Length: 201
Image (cartoon, rainbow, N blue to C red; front, side, top):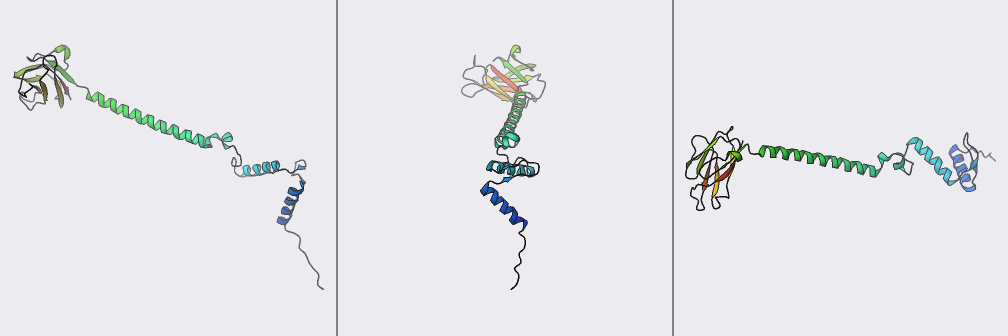
């Protein structure tokens, strides 16, 4: 009859058996340098937390926001909102700057108030040297320190209710390249009328 030989259990089996006994019987377990005490669910959780934190700090902590608030979802949302607000504010400032620049460039560089007889109202005019009436409803300007690229004429409602005015960039009845204004009556015929005019560079 042959001999029955047995081999010693592997370390894994020994560890599993000890864990089972400790879980079922509350066996006292103590690590190096620790006092002996019963292994409870709370202690197992603490041991597991320490082990996981040792490998990846902060992952096992249930309150990540308390230990690392910069990693919280709320903080990320706040940061995103702040970024969006900054971007929106910058865009608004840029738009305001563009609008301000456009407004500045849109300011008339010269303007005038002229009577129906062609007399320049100096007190309500700027950068206009003189105006002359060269014909019925035709007014020509000189002494403007630039060549106007555009303008707008409007009949003065005091003394010219039914008339209308039209800016002429210098291609009409005025001599040379002088800018001018033509005023018309209600039928569309040239007719003297007081008006305001602005000139743009």
